[in-house]
Length: 188
Length: 188
DNA sequence: TTGACTCTATAACGACCGGTCTATATTAGC
DNA sequence: GCTAATATAGACCGGTCGTTATAGAGTCAA
Image (cartoon, rainbow over all chains, first blue to last red; front, side):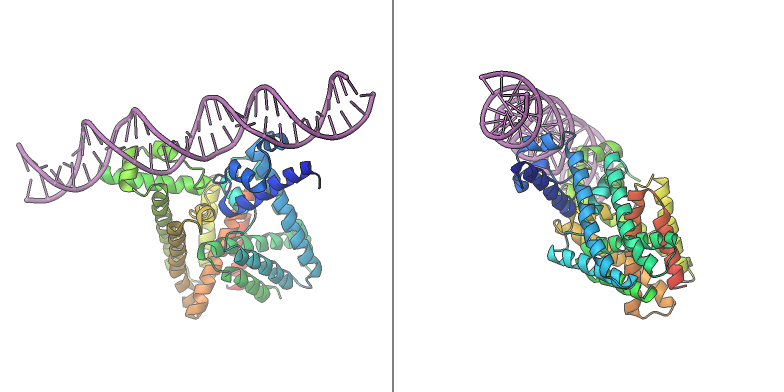
């Protein structure tokens, strides 16, 4: 990768990581610059609208990467319960590997900035829609109508989001495992 | 109420509201002072350890007030599903009444500060335990074992937490209504 | 060679940050 | 009423914040 694209990419990835672990407002640009190794002039060169624009790019990248993980599981899962189990296991693994700091890669930023920041609110909503688009076919294959599949997908995402919040507060992966188990009980 | 207690209370309540709506790090002390009407000297008088100590008081107050709401519903609910419905309806009402800004009164702060701030992490964990203590008897009355009742209570809290996150991002109360409906389908 | 473009380097800016501190005002208790 | 304790008022502090502006370096096509 050329140096140019390298710095832009590093900025977005570093921002994504830091926003996830400590939130948007408490992550200063200087920290992002220091940890990414990107030059300060480049930050405004690539993101002329500043921090918010960088955050939007970070939210969209996070949504894309999560989407790739979800798609991989969706392809392999024979049932919604198997999918839920894989999804929860992956999230539990990330949580444990990050000392319960890396939960949902967009939730903290969204809770701080939506609906005040329109750009971020829009990006966050599109990310959720994207994840629903990926997950709904799992439910469709199990016989759900299109509408129910989308609702079920949203419910699964919400369940995992909530479990991630509780997991972070209680420093335990149990809430995630509980989601998988409840799903198996409800939709085998 | 005497003026003295009035200012301390106003600080905590204002902090609680602002942290809930916009997060911890992006809420400056000056805004809390301005909106609460409390004198700056009083802030450090009552909270000599500063912002973090104020936030801890805010988290604990939020937990207590939510606990009172949950207890009122728990007393009246004949079934876990009825309880879940009441809980979700109340949260949906708060969300709609605040333009989808007032979700869980502690989640944003906790996602920003746990586990980095030990005081806040501890306070948040105790708040969740407190809520579980209040909700578990609902499941016990429906026949669950003590262990299962606590797990079910945690799962309901997690489900509502996640629904609140999605509700805020998508500016819709549907995720909360979905939680109530799913609970009714699973545990009538 | 020249000018345009891309990217970097960095000083500087005004605003805001949480916190400190001292003098003063108010309250509580006797 | 008096004294000690509690609470208030607000100026000030050093630091950080996100952003701006400008100069410079390198590349490339005409």
